[in-house]
Length: 506
Image (cartoon, rainbow, N blue to C red; front, side, top):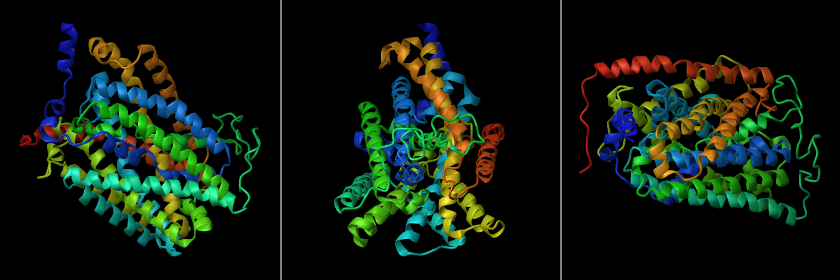
């Protein structure tokens, strides 16, 4: 017991000691569910699923069982063992030490920067559909830059004020998702036939198990649908992100509640709207970000099409806000621990880490400028589908990078329960055998999700196989290759920087 206490004290981070004195406790159970849904439930992923037919539902169910539920169990246990700021960054430090912690933290943080382009691309695509416009690449980029700027400003405001706005948009988002589901019911009630025949329980085209009988390790086949599993894993990533703000939670019960209720909301919403598009949207629209609005327009008319479209636009603006403030906490704790320059741990008068938010916004803006205002004028392509292509390729790269951090999550739990047996005994939520099962299956699912991303494009209508995996691989490799450089340069810069005053709450 004394040895374990010494080990725990020796592995304690500066951020564990001081973050709770800097950041206020404001998050309740409803807040945590809203943040979880904002992070995980990208309803815009559904247009990427449904064009493959009923097998998209099959893969969703497999993903729920092999990834979402297991990830929620592991995350809940880690949060009860070490409920500090930074989630996977903190837990990996407990398990493996400083460099692994920084690597896992980066792999969990960098997708938060890339996803700002994805959310802005959704907004650009919806605007073009609603207005019947076709934006040139520079204008699509400008829309994304505006979204990034708005997100940075809003996320730097008083946290309680920002979270109240997120909660309102969360409720409206739920309403819009229900309206999409209702539109499919109306489509059938109005006498239309379903675009999808749900009666084929086989592995042939249009069947519930289409392509599952193919070897998932074969990258040359054109009939495999296993890449959908990677897309589903993408759609379920972010389980641990609300715990980036672990010290800002009012009561520990909020952790259990958000993991349970947030997971239920995510599963129901994905299944409902996937079914709705299978019924009431032409599968040829697969990959079109605006496909969610097609059945609404067809059954409820232009008014509700605009209502749902504007709600989705508003939600994706606030998704960007949530990503901005939640992922900034990873930079914040890295600055406190002197793994990055301590300036990123500064907070503003609202006790929000505004420097970290600004750093993220600048990086996302630079990538946007290159992607939309440089590359399209060097490489020829279809400007009309640029938003969808950028969205899907960045989502794929996000899957690869984020899944790397999820492997750490699933492995962390095994090392931590062995390294700190007394802490685990006092705070365990289930038998150790369950965590072994979750860890093994979850880690395999994460690795397999990465592999299947490369197997086939998320949308065969928009990408050739070669262009797809070359682009995704390039983004992922460049992103992960800079981690050691950032670690050593960041740590050296941090050590040479003058001490930062540590503010405390008044």
